[in-house]
Length: 406
Ligand code: HEM
Image (cartoon, rainbow, N blue to C red):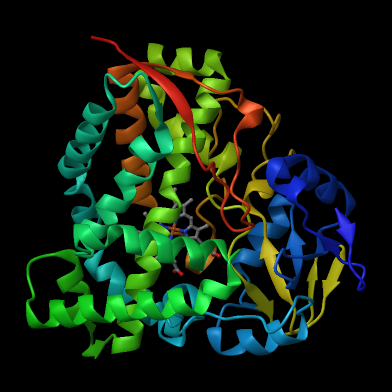
């Protein structure tokens, strides 16, 4: 980790190989550290559990998209301008503060009921079984391509009526927009994505059905509906949040089980441990590393550090979840530990709306995989490549060998 001219720590490629040991050092040193993200944005990184939880919930850390450009311009150390998303994709609940956040979230919660999520169970099982059937007999497969990626994206695309033939386009744009490591393509991908989603919305308005997306398009709270840009932004958030995260819950979770054969054996011997194992996957190495941007609306004391007004603050969830003061033996992967209270789904008003769906997909995917196959890593753990994203923690690929249990 090098330093920039302003004395901030620059994130270097080694961070993505092993962020945990760097976080452990940062947690020792201070409650918050100034870092420069790979593209050039200077932010405060909060790595301890208590302070991360505080940052996620305190209203003095704003998420309102209206203020973000100005803060970004003042804290930019990169080349050119900080490129922001297409304006028709940003007006969603994760970029809003109460009371607008409350309004947007209420409208989508009406369409995303626990009953609608539970009703997805047979379809999630069916998709999983089809994917596992296709993987059977191949010997060695990449579990990301074979199961972890296609399952959640199929579920969320079916929920939002994205036609099958557009899923590859969709995946490409989404990767560009979320990874952010191809800035020259950001604008074009944003426009393409916004145009595509506008088409889906228009189609649903013209042909409403008894489905989740129709419910969203027509959701109203005291006659307050989502306007066009809010709807497109909402669909964007759901599609991205729904498929860039759960892929890592499944792939990283299985990876850690295979790296810890005693834990795999425990789970095979007692399948009632599965829900707890999913919580430990989330705590030990969850899909989201640094939660999304927040900025201070006044000076705020965070532990031993005073963060001035108008600065970006990122809470590292994977670091908070390894904080020894909250989770004893935090670096030990133990599927029987009480992992409750982890921050993998965030905390406060922006707590993940999709958590019940993500848990359901994770349980069905991992449970069905273990039912059907004996499974082993087909590569040395240290040779696997992690995504170079400060937002998402996940493997590009997970080579495994599968043999049918008969
Ligand atoms: C918010 C994690 C799956 C939809 C969040 C946040 C986190 C998170 C950490 C809060 C971010 C912040 O405060 O900065 C995860 C993880 C998932 C997952 C680890 C999988 C294991 C899903 C799925 C969906 C979804 C499947 C939708 C279908 C959302 C939405 C928000 C959100 C809409 C914004 C909520 C708000 O602003 O009120 N998620 N998520 N997530 N997530 Fe998830």
